[in-house]
Image (tube, rainbow, N blue to C red):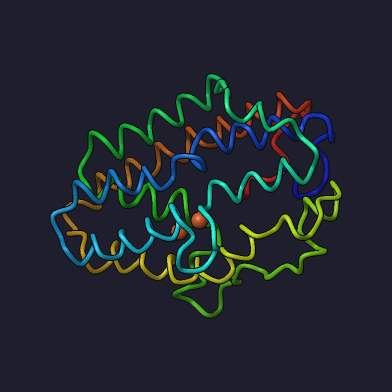
Length: 222
Ligand SMILES: [Fe+2]
Ligand SMILES: [Fe+2]
């Protein structure tokens, strides 16, 4: 949405706040909920490694990923106090409620798909399996949209850099969980939850785009 610099500077905080409060701030906890419910040790081990990195940055990032996310608003000179009292917009709250339902009150398979694929994944996932499909482009620090369009100092990209280093492994782990450990009899329910997440997420992004003064969501990429 801000990839093209179309969100006005003075509205960008809305996007970052809603993103932080829907899934970024609590992401390690969301993974933890799935960990607790999962009966398969191999899957729990994959999740545990992801949780450890997300919650502590102990493997790569050097700090918790939700904390590193706050480098973005800090580097852009935003009031960080706002990030302690975020009120979710209605569609954002519905999206989060669906994630809560999927990670707290559903089968572990649904929680795993929602966290490791829907939230943590990206639209280039297919390239992991098909070399003919375009892979996620690797952007230099200067090309990062927050740097290019909003003047974010490059030393505030620690989260982006950490994801570049570790998330490839998390993508592989996500698909190992999905393909090696989820019984095909669950696929229908998992796909239903993913479809619902996509619908809720698109409505949430549309809502944020409008709150930022854009007529229409300009780019659906996360
Ligand atoms: Fe991760
Ligand atoms: Fe992360």
